[in-house]
Image (cartoon, rainbow, N blue to C red):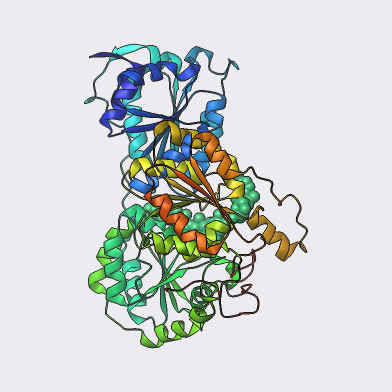
Length: 570
Ligand SMILES: Cc1cc2nc3c(=O)[nH]c(=O)nc-3n(C[C@H](O)[C@H](O)[C@H](O)COP(=O)(O)OP(=O)(O)OC[C@H]3O[C@@H](n4cnc5c(N)ncnc54)[C@H](O)[C@@H]3O)c2cc1C
Ligand SMILES: Cc1ncc(C[n+]2csc(CCOP(=O)(O)OP(=O)(O)O)c2C)c(N)n1
Ligand SMILES: [Mg+2]
């Protein structure tokens, strides 16, 4: 069958199981758009290419599959850079397809030519320029394999215009990926394995550190079996939230800079840390010199480059989390660790009584109230997509996730503007899900143009703007570390409800605590997208906080109530 390169591209994507592409056209990718029109692929027209990459990323994070974004050369491609870096830092499988000028013009500073593979070299798992139509099918098959195997990550495929236009014989069977053979994994290293088993079975104060790798491995069941058979408590990274139910009594909550105080203290007191699919980010460890000094460490991790990168470990089990946990399971001896669990329960103190959720209504609306009400109203079953800042941390503390892939957030790059487009992608991946955007007034203004995409695609999501009139997280740092000099953090915003109306979206403003639940209910009942502008307390701060570079146990605690940091179950 003779097809153009553009037709081969669309046919290959279809055969790879793609149904949705998030993109924006332009001259250098026009042949592909022409072929797209004749294909069964659903193209979602975004308003900015950064949005396309976040949508593809949100799609990947919600589904576990690969998300696809497309753009033209030059400015289209460079607009993708932030989204690609976001996916890279959080190991998200995204394939970006860009058009480029004809191969003969490459390197000539032609109109809208940029070296996008050069630009994205350090922020892609792999990238490649395709200059021949006959290479398109194989290259795309390779791109999908690379993006979603081992440690996932973004792949960029740059296709020159002449490769899109040329007609060649299309042979899918012959277009097989040419990839180097997989390396033998170290989790077959018996000495490391035996050491890990010995450490696990002799520890008195063990703690599991659960990360996103558990979800990437699809190892939730193996993980739960492992936890229950060993009765070891679990602390989660921000990106690990959802890999183990929040309601499980062994789940202690989030660790790190804004983690629960009792979790961070338990880490510092533990005699064994079992890190599973997490990479000891600096937001997690604080000062490395004082980090968990009393603990031996086991690291279960697929990427050998992560072993001993930040934290030296006593046993490294390199391989897939699920496979490794299944291999460990028969060797585990049950131990109830009762004194240790009792000690951790004591670290929690009287937080249930003195928590902000239990305090009498002062007439002020706090972000924590909004998020905790959202959790109660959605029974913890929504997919929540957050942006970056204080609201992101309050979501992690006050919305209790029991299901994997229900918290979608930019952790490693911390990309403001991520939430709205990523939520659109998540909705395409999970059309039946109740998708909520939790976003700050700052981050929302970065990508709010995608409201038009929602309207054009007629999709239903719910948008909760946590509007504190500040770039809140930066204001908090200025309050704590710069003597309250609020330089460039007070933020003027439009009337978000009126703005929503201008896009043809229902918008509402909420200022009182009593109105929160009715507004959430009404939004959920509406068949159309609803935006709620929650006007919350302006100078509220996220507690606890480990100042950057401080030891994990040196937390700034909530003022006047030293034992109280976060919500507990009602
Ligand atoms: C404002 C802000 C504040 C933050 N505060 C905190 C905080 O208080 N606490 C916190 O935890 N984070 C916080 N973060 C997030 C933090 O920066 C990191 O993104 C996060 O800690 C990383 O979590 P992770 O290691 O689980 O996930 P990732 O960074 O996604 O790492 C996953 C790891 O799993 C491995 N892996 C992948 N697949 C597999 C597999 N199949 N089997 C085994 N391993 C696999 C990968 O190689 C990787 O090493 C914050 C971010 C922001 C923006
Ligand atoms: C693209 C980008 N620019 C700057 C930052 C630095 N930054 C981190 S949090 C934050 C403030 C976010 O403000 P807002 O969206 O209103 O959320 P809030 O913290 O108030 O909840 C800023 C500016 C960032 N993370 N991303
Ligand atoms: Mg704000």
